[in-house]
Each structure stands twice: as C-alpha cells, then as structure tokens.
Image (cartoon, rainbow, N blue to C red; front, side, top):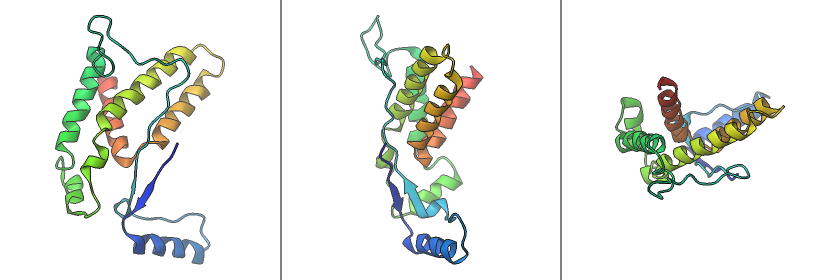
Length: 162
C-alpha cells in the first residue's frame, strides 16, 4: 500500500512540527487545508473474482443493478463535487486542487465495496471472523483519501437505508 501525503502549505507544516518538537508533544496538528492524501488501490483477498453478469457478460460495475446504482450515485455526487456545498467550494480557490486526481473515485468505491462483500461472505464463519473483517475494513480506510472517505460514507448511508 503506497500512500502519498502531498503538502500544500509547507510553512504551516514546518511550524506544526517545530511546535511539536519544542513543546515535546507526541503529535503535530495541521489543518486539512494544508495537505492532501492521495488514494491508492485496495487489493482483494485471495479467491476474489470480478463479478460478471451471467445475462449480459458485463463486469463490475455493470454486473448487477446494485453495483450499477452505487457507481451511479457516487458518480453523480462526484459530478457536483466540489460545488456541492460552501465547504467544498473553497477547494476551487486552492491552487493545488485538481479534481481529475480523483476521477476514478466511483470505480474505486464500487471495487472496495465488492471486495469487502466477498471477504464478509467468505470469512463470516471462521473463528476469527470479526478481526479479519474489521482489519480489512480498516485497511480499506487507510488506503483512502479524504475524498474517498466522503464517497464511502455516502455509500454506507445508501446501504443502510435499503
């Protein structure tokens, strides 16, 4: 898992770390406006196969109505982003913000959801099922960016309302 932290405001970053060292604190605190975390791909567990529709032969995300709908919902959300609200509209003023860096967010969310579903289906009966499943979900979160967190939250809200 390769994660990249892109520092946009070096002065604030250096100041925060200097303060941490001078104050002998175990952590530094910087604003989310000062950095960006890129997302990286999640690896599926062994045995996972990309879902393919028996009727149409189409692969994920077009393999079934559920995955199509998740892809569509996240894509519609991403089309509006960052003009979706005042908080995110501020990103448009940032010189470093490039929406195209996140253009694959819809497919990433669908893939991670499919991988996680497969893991739950195959591991739920094992003695250590809870640890295996929660560790994998934690791994999914760690390879996400701040933007992915928002998209994933949207999907979980959708799932929980059905």
